[in-house]
Length: 258
Ligand SMILES: [Zn+2]
Image (cartoon, rainbow, N blue to C red):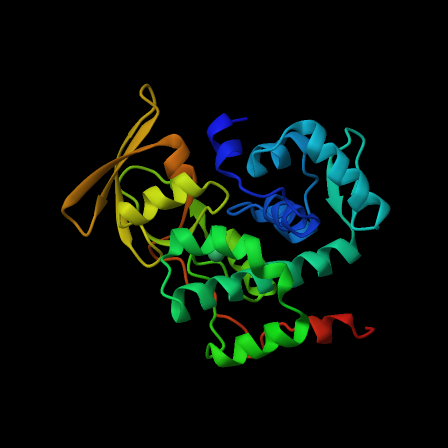
């Protein structure tokens, strides 16, 4: 756990933020088989690490979420989203991503600011407000960091993306999503111009130094640490774009039986 991150966290994490974190860890990018089988068990330590909290705090919240029927616990106490937890998480990520778009599109915040600010206010938006926001923003397909508003779209797209650490030398790819869990990392991506839609080529992988060099726009070379490269999810050249459904997933339709 990084101390800096704890200091920069100005509020304690809500149950919704935990569910959003578990959702992201449960459906990893670039994993073909697991993401089709359903949510992956998520170790409490990874949840604590992503949120920058102690394992004890994470354990307490997981106990609460278990009591609410949102997560089940595996043999090693890892968290597994139940069906109820899965639907709740889809609703939470959708709301979060739309509030981020409100912050960037209407209020003029940049992408790095929008994630953190959205964390503080998104639970104030009820379902009706979220739907109104969706329409007013012109039914956006993605949050500023490239995550689909429609969680089903996110799941369909996951297997087509790879973190930059999984690309080979000479591979070309388009950055689609930026990891959001670390505010400083997100800030770095924006400062370096590594935003969704950026085309890159993996120039060199240096396994001894643990860095990768990428070429942006065919000229600028950038050296990334493994941590930085791992937070950039890209679609390799030649892999077809997974389109969003015309009918975007709405929480209400998901709660109707069948
Ligand atoms: Zn986002």
